[in-house]
Length: 573
Image (cartoon, rainbow, N blue to C red; front, side, top):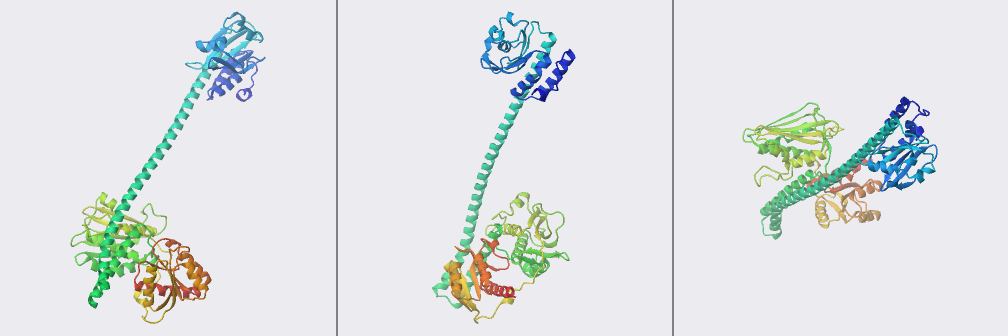
């Protein structure tokens, strides 16, 4: 330790040399942070500074004095413990004052027997620590004589530096302990806050689920009532053909509304199955003009402006049409006569919503000059079942559906509104990588009824769904073979069944429809495949496999069958 802390300077003789060594020692002690460190630095410096024949560092250990370190020309008492009342070091610490002894054998405070076997004849002992000393440093000489004032001053300077170092160490230790306590308290408080937030989120979630369940149950009961009453009249068989047709139309209309409600719920939850293609916004908006005009009526003006050269967007054409219709209907309901609605499409500028990923986007805006919304209403506008309309005139799912759809497509929705001025809803839609492909209309895909369409394997684990779908397929002219799951369907094929097309549900026990379809593509690429799905696991289905969402009508089923056949033919070439 001596070589690490001090350069060898020999035995200092002059007062200047000793004070220079003391300054070096004091500077070293200023860096000490623990009692052990202070002891090591004193042992390495004190003898040279004072010019003594030996020094020792003594620690107070309860009612005993522990001689922990020494640097002397002959061994003294390093490692030994003595009762404090019998030691000079103990006396110095208890009385908090320096002890100077010219002749150790003439002073009653000195234990004569302990010193008789040593070289010590005169000594100096200085306590260390304030206000209660915790240690002491002693300097010893082999000659009898009074320690000089300079020697006393030097040793006391070292003791003060050591006391300061111990106090700093205590403060640093207390600060570190406080920091640890603060860190622990922060961790505990953070954990408490997280638990409280989790509890709050769970409570809010249950409230939303309760509200959602109540509203959905109410809306579905309202829709099931006309469906059940109409079908009940049909099943009774007492109605005229015209009345049966009206009842069936009423039931179908209610079922279509129920389907739309489910689509809105799935869009809000970002769980709806999407048929994403490249969509030409100019053609889409132009194609909706007649529908939107009849929806708005003659008293509300509708303008649209689509920037030239606008690229196609990545979207589900049908769902995007529904979103635009929802926005226009919301705008219509927010204004009186002589209102104006604008539909604007242009390239999104640099001011994109922060939550959007980097990329190219098209902005589709629906702007009105209606009543507008205050900040509170605007903030709650996308919450499910929130509506400002009168009871029975809105489900409160329109904007939440639009927001869910746009987010599911990788875009974003923003609402700007001011009471008395109007509202502007902006949809940021990602640009499609490829140009919009021509999409055949359902009417163009209609085939002649009554002719044989070939063998079809229908796979679904729900008997009622199988029965209903089978009836529709039989009406389309197919010979249908049923299987309750994918494993049994594979067994039929391995036994020799070669259907022209396979229709399979997606969510089934054992093997999913997506897994079944991939297996068929590998082993029998000539068989056309179509998957019927609600929403679960929709992302796992290969994008080039034709999908049909439940519930569906006959025309939708027929169009999807033709698309699946075309897909199978193109994959073989």
